Image (cartoon, rainbow over all chains, first blue to last red; front, side, top):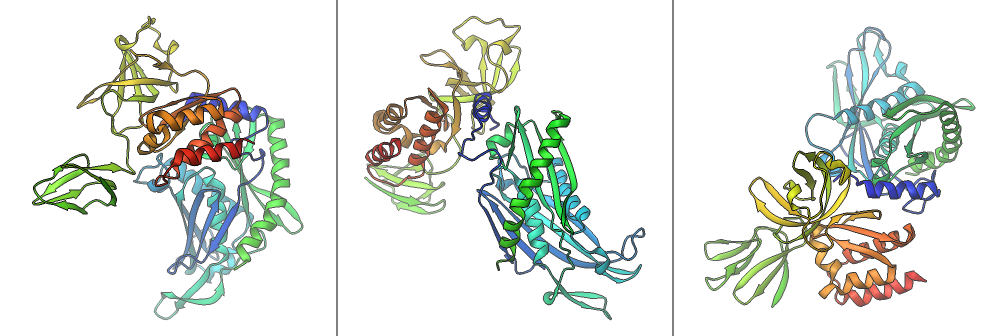
Length: 271
Length: 220
């Protein structure tokens, strides 16, 4: 059932007083739990929980011909699937526009930050290169699937190893992993999504807040050298955002990113 | 009277002496469960008290629903059931301008109504009765409809306890939607927590007493 006008009004009332239903501050995250290496068959995998929200991500690697416009680079193909078991709003069938949008935001964050060193994925220029398949599945939607998906993608990529590749037979031997890790850089992207509910901006919404929101902005940021920069940004929803609102959000996002990044890096590497 | 947890396909009891009730079917000489729940044998009747599953409307149920569409002669209501419900204008005891039904109840508004009739094409609702109508202010929470008897308690003991301690007005719909209204939002959130406390403990004996203790402890 969709959210009622009454509950929506209550959320607005509460946010006006700077409070949220679960007692968090407007920009507080719920607890993040990251497990890596959850799938035996994937080259890299991760399960991310933000509160009750849960997603799993898997990385598979394949060898194929590089694209003509980038003969010396590998490729990244990412997909997000909203499983019907995770929310009453999701139906089975081909991915909805929301799932496609989510996949593109995740993809763009990784691509634009230069997290994957595509040049190192090339086996033979113009003929053979590794393709990274990144698949993300929602297990439970309790709000903020967006940030959870982006986080799961990064965690899965970070733990991915190459499978063995038989050059003569031109075949990847799946199931036997090498020690060689996926070529990644230091620029780990983390996506923060700000939701506008009535006139307040919040981070990491629960389902009720997400359903009563009018607009959201996803901001992917990463560290480039000593600086933190914004790699990608996407606004969705029907309501407009004012210039000064946007600037304040970007500033807040930058500070929040600096708090969250070391925590996330620690959670992924702890294994 | 004995109760035990059964799963679909499980044989509850064998013999021609017993009659299958709700959620039970006969297969040859055996009575087999067709849903998950507590099997109850009272006299000759064998029935299942469901522990999960969707709300199935019954005539006379008081339900809470959300207006999802307005037609020329009434409102379409989502009552959290597999069937769509309809509230016709003639079942409303008040006068309305029938050319502007949105004035009375717009899409997204919540109403309390009674199930009047169940037909093949859907469920008919009525507003004729005490305490029925559109809900103003407050908030809506959802619980599993099979937990509703627990939330209400014996002769309303549980719900009256929660009402008293949280100082909230509460209406429990048989379909699992609950309307809460208190002086402050904190009161509403407190009564929500109390209701969640009840629904998360399906097998506990003497739950009303335990809820009373919990409420008094939390209230401090």
